Image (cartoon, rainbow, N blue to C red; front, side, top):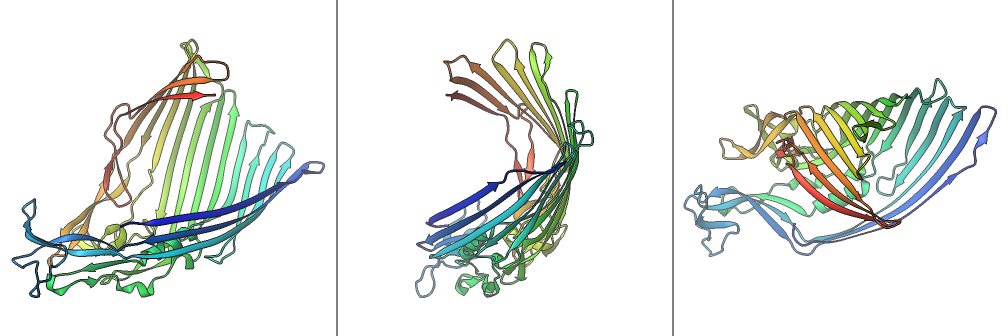
Length: 453
C-alpha cells in the first residue's frame, strides 16, 4: 500500500565433503559432511502514509462539512451509482504509515550422514542436521534416515522406509512482515462527528512469530517398489505430523488485538500408487509409454492458516448456519484434494518426428466453505462475512502437448510445440484460501518454438 522502497541482499557459502568408502568384509560405509553460512539483510521504507477506506454508510441528511467549515474525509453528498445511498461516507479506514526498518539474519547449518551398504541386500542412510539462526537463537537438531531392503538382491522387490524431521526456516521473512505490520492501523467511525477510533489498540501485547518455537514436521515413510518384466510398480505411505505450527490468536474481540502462539497442529496420511512400463510398447506405428498414478490423502488440523482469524475473514465474527460465531471458531477449510487419479500417455511416432503426450486426471470432491464478504448485517447495522458449506464437484482434466522436431543442422535442433490445456473445456472450480469459489482455467492454446544448440 503506497509507494515502497525495498532492498534485499544475501551472502551464502556452503561446503560439502564426500569421503572415500570404508569397506569391510560385507559392509561399506561412505560418510558425507557439510556446513553452510548465510547472511541476509533487508531494507524497507514507505516514504508517505497511505489510507484505504471501506464500508459505506448513508449520510441520512448530514453534511460533509462541519460547523467550523472543515470537510470530513471520505464523504460524498452525491448519490451512489447503484442508488443505494443518497449521499454517503466511508466508516472504516486502514492507515499504512510512513516509516522504515532494517532486518538482518545470520544462519548456519551443519550435517553428517553415513550411507551404509550391506552387499546388494541393504542400503541405509543415517544422519543428523543442526540449524541455528540469529533471530530464533535456537539450535534445532533433526534426524535423517532412509532404508532400502532388497530381499532378492535385485530390483524385483525393494522395501522402503524412513523417518525424518524438518524444521521451518521462515524466521527472517516472519520478522520482516511482523515489523512492517506495526506501521498499519485500522480505524472506524459510527458517525462523522465522532471522528476516527482505532480498532487495533492491542498491539502493545503483540508477540513476534520469530520469538516462538520453530515449527517442525516429523515424516514417516513406508513403501515398496518392484521392477518385473516390463512393469515398474511403487506403493508408498507417508505420514506427516506437524507440530508447533504458528497460529494467530485473537486476544480482544472489540479492538481486534492479536498475538501468535505455537498451538497449531496438523497430521496427514498420504497413500500413493504408481505403475508404468519400462520399455515403450510398439503399437500402430508408434512407441507408447504409459504411467498411472493414484493418491489418497487424509488430513486433520486445528487451524486453516497461521492468521486464520479476523485477517482472513476481515471481520472478527462471521455468520455461519444461522448465527454469529467468532471467526476462529468456524470450521476449517479442506484445501487438499482427497484423491486423484492421473494417466500420462506418450506417443512417439516411428515415421514422423512427432510426439504427442496426453495428461488425464480425475480429482475427488472437496468439502469447504464459501465466503461472501460482508454478506450479513446484524440488528445494529454491523456487517459480517457470511460462510456457507460448499462442496466442489469431481474434476476431470485432459491436457495435450504435441512436439514436432524439424530436421536441422548438426548439433542444433528446432522443435515446434502446441499445448492444449483443458481440451474438453470443462467448467471446473476450486475454493481459494479465503473461502471464495474461483473458476479453473478454461480451454487454453499455447504455441511455442524451441531452438537448441
